[in-house]
Image (cartoon, rainbow, N blue to C red; front, side):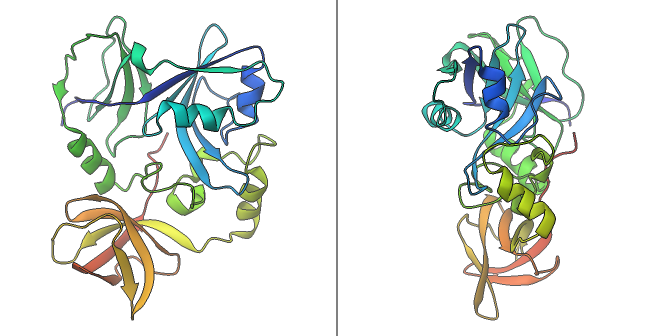
Length: 271
């Protein structure tokens, strides 16, 4: 499969101000000092996931935050919720770019005026794309449904579809995006407790219909009459479901549409 391009509505927020670097470092679960591009989770004080962004350090000292599924006003509210006397400003820049995802096999060639950043949108290698307004992609078009199917069949979690305000990152295969060494940030104490005690009860797994019939998001799964989980994302007969941690791969759960087979745990693509 060659590279394909899927238009998106990715939120783009620019964060500026003299305190921007220090402030963002103390808010998200990523260590922004390590790389120029970081996958960042934004947690509440209880360690639950509020948003996911790609954080890009700009040459002028500002930061671009790219969020696949969080609307601009919601993302700005999450990012700036704890601004008190900090010199920090967050501005919605989404309308200034044509946004999309490039995914498949191969490496994108450089195109004048187009910025590409390694992403985690698909099971295949993928890149977030910021292009000038009116730009025409030189790559073949692929639908959002095709992109989602590639992600779900590979077991790649998405925020908030698979991991949101009721879930811990570790339950959903997002642990690689959590720093245990950077120091204080929102939710850090809970992350440290999970690391040391391993106190999880659920896990996000790939699932598939035993009969090959389409799955539905929100479908409850049960074993011996007891509800043990719920389907989150779906792509035809395949999906991702948050289920009890003690259920092994290969077990067949009961759903309204028939049997659902549990597969391997979800995980983000390797860096």
